[in-house]
Image 1 (cartoon, rainbow, N blue to C red):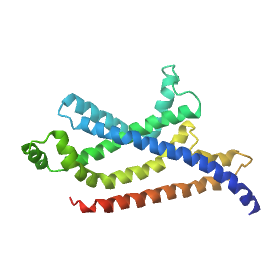
Image 2 (image 1 turned 135 degrees about the horizontal axis):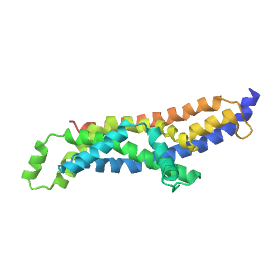
Image 3 (image 1 turned 120 degrees about the vertical axis):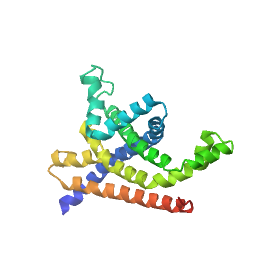
Image 4 (image 1 turned 180 degrees about the horizontal axis):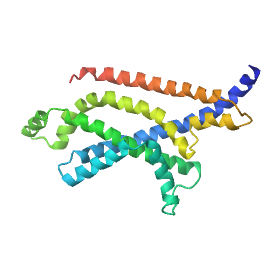
Length: 229
């Protein structure tokens, strides 16, 4: 017990630092993937056949392959195959590579959620808007947007909560996120070795983050209840 009390502050400091990296990756992914996903969804719904086919093939490839493989390809391919290690070997480069991989991956998942939400709105609303002289942009933002938000909120919240846990995959390229920090104590870190409890303790951080997001999305859904679809 005394040894645990001595180790606890050291472990918590390390896990806090790792969790900050996890949160950074989480927020950067959301900031990049949400608007990119909307752009991709418009591409997949485009009436220009080559664009829609190309977009859907890219989405199929990204959604059909493991995120871990995508991380490895994005990080190692430029240096090992092209001879141009654009990411470097430092933590900032690993974070940039992980961010690119996560943004592309989640943008493709978000795009399908956006597409489903947009296409679920009755086409008659577009026709009614055109009769009133509204442009396509006005119809989307003034008539359809709130309906789309209401429809996509449950699947989007599910993907965002999943993102919290998926950030742990970044350790495959040695990004020092929270799982990496917890696992380091099993080997040797800051004078502690052979300790497995810090790795299990990382689950508390994930549970806390997922719990807060669940409460947040529950509150948003309740606020959107005034808009029935």
